[in-house]
Length: 490
Image (cartoon, rainbow, N blue to C red; front, side, top):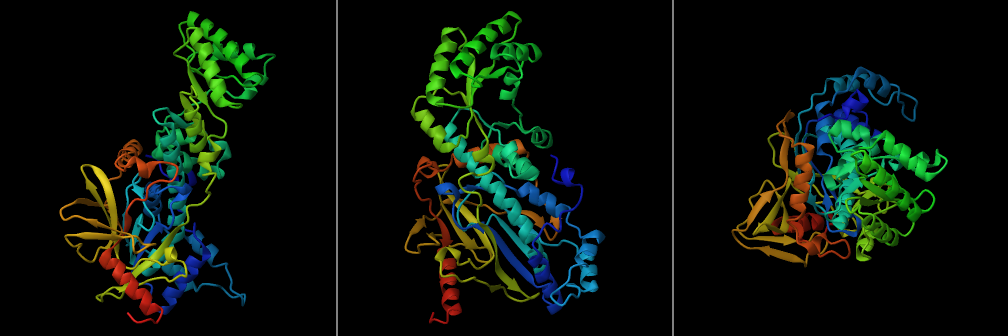
């Protein structure tokens, strides 16, 4: 599998916010840089009004960490930065320290394509405080965007069902990397292919496409345009029929289809890109069937998303596949996931962990303390609940899951219920230990795992609430730490 360094040809270590480096400098100056810390990357609220999200971006993190070096040109640039007094922001000795820094963190992560829920760690980073801090911005940049796009793709594929769904969003994507990583994430989440040729080359994603309106407009009439395209590419004919009059365009496509058959080729399909897609697809299907072209497929595009596709299906639209662009590649109705990266514990070498908590007036924004892991429980192959627990403690025989937002909501997991831990080792003390699956395996994993949740949890509108929260003893510890931090009796 190709990686992001095939594109950028240099380490991206400075892909970070300045405050990460100023904090790193302050850790170094105060002698706390080598304290051992544990950070967790998670999101607080599921996107798109759903119940969960599809974890995505781990391969980019692996590539990022595997090429994590601070170059001389990096430190030369940092050396030009000045403070309010116009003096250098960083000591030369610190810049020398950065250049010699050797990555030694342990990283555990949820495999890509795995459904995850609010507050659950997607990535756990453990190691020297200064190193953990320097990873924050890049990790959030990677995971937030790719998880958002994979989740949107999963929702659209849920609506499309067995019909193929192709990602068509490159021209509307947020820059080159938004297009490339977005195509990859969309494929993991459920897209059956992409129009993005570079993503096809880099990741092995199937690519699709024929012609645009400009092809038709470049000829004197539509029929001539279809004939010329069929002559040029008889093995790749899907005609865009709505440049002028859609149903007349279908008639022209039928005429050319019969000519193609005389040469031993077949028209693959027609594409509808505007108008009343339900009505037009039904009428087009009648015309095609009456002409003996039942094999010709009808594809639809035009600002589609999961809601429009669901509505088209309810109307009995005769659409065989969907091309989804802007609203997928930009996560149109929710442009950011809102993932965060929070300190859970810290200690000096040889000492016990000091569990840390961030307070807020909003219950959902109070962080979870500890060295966290997630156990997913199942019965007869179906998932029933997730428990976030402290990896430094053993889970009891009977597990009680407490909702992190509403502690009165609890689920008891019976003794002996099967469970699996979601966070898996990726780097151990700086050494890569993960056996990364292929992109196709990851896509299959996403579908397989998603189907293990009850349909009421997967539904697009008002999904049933899945029990995912803190294990009871961790909830009690969190409550104790909150009370202590607020100066209240425990």
